Length: 358
Image (cartoon, rainbow, N blue to C red; front, side, top):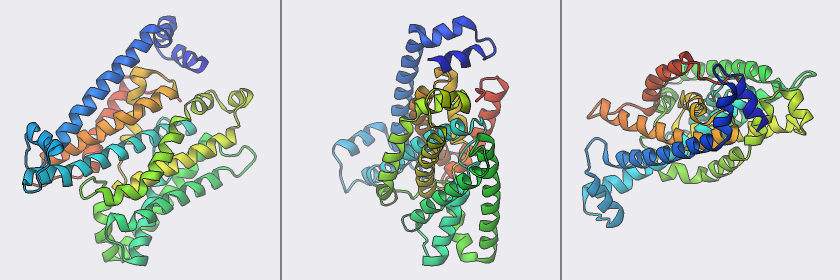
């Protein structure tokens, strides 16, 4: 692919051999091997997620709970009614955040873009505060739709502001508009919470990002959003590859740049809004995963999207496992653990010079 070749040759140490490896049999074998390793690692982490918690449950007991469930066995109850729903929610949320972060970086051509820079997290937060105040919502399944609506409204507002002017919604204007809207919404949310102690108490648990207490009651109503958003994201690979070449080149190759950015924004709103409403504002996942994936699949967004989904699920489940064991018998929230491990990982990626120039 032309864009892949161009990106490789501009990379320090790239050269012809790197291009040949990534586009030829060696590159395909590398991607296939990476996919196999990711699949194995994800399977192991899922098993660990079912076995590790406040009480350790042996793997054979986990298997028994899955194959011959005994409703009178406390360990079987813990696996089936608590850990499986939590793990499934983690996988779905991880996939959504990985895809949304990849699209955000691609559509803005900003290597530091994530849901925060587009105002998604802050819009969801304002929507949830509104739900708490207006209808007295205290549980995730009660206020999640307010979060989705808030995220969608914030995305629409960012797009509207960025599209003003002759050039339309350029990557720079999207990033600046998103940062401005995020700051404004964050200030509004903080002001409301300071003046309303009940809303503050209800928001405190959601704000740090968590998989604890999330089950099928929260996930099932939002599955259509996740399904549509995931399908749309996986179809955006060619579009993001063309946008990476610049607006003029993309237009010359037949891409309607404005429509492409609108579809990308809608996809980010679906995935990011649903994930944030379900699990809270989880930072760094959508930021570090695309950069990590680029290291072993190259700059082609078709591959980055395909690999970011399982890698993000793997990372969030691993962080959730660490959150359960670090502070036993209690547990930390997965958003805190991801922030602790995400910052140094991202710094390491940047220092190694592996973060792609978008």
